[in-house]
Image (cartoon, rainbow, N blue to C red; front, side, top):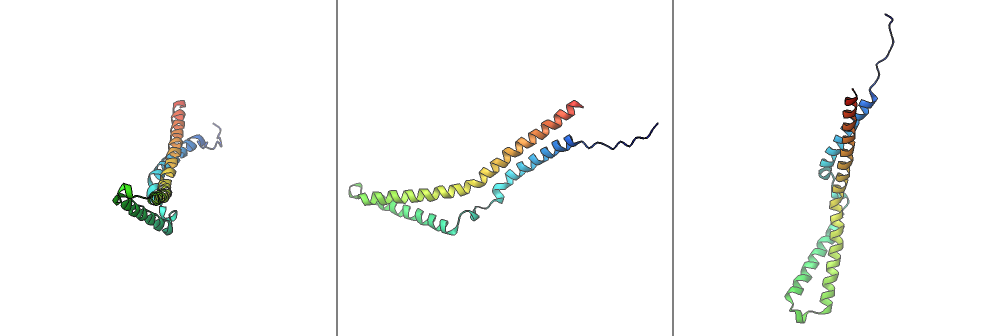
Length: 132
């Protein structure tokens, strides 16, 4: 019997499918850990925090003043001041909510990418096994 120098073939398809599956699992794990690892302090400055607290306190003070003043004695200036305080507080609250929600959006992206990648790897492994 003649000796053959046939080198073993590397199962590249299997390696790609397993890599896809493992990458997907890592992305899903990262999506779970991301909100805990992400720190919003880098995106919300101390000045913004002070402005937010100041706007909240001002809104509270004006609302209490408006609530304590009988409706027949409330002036247009008080209503305008209250509307301006509500607008400023609403703007700052929107910025704060955007900073808080950013890690959740990134985590969702990781979760979907991981799910699709893991499913693709699993489907490839199942198809390869079915072929024999």
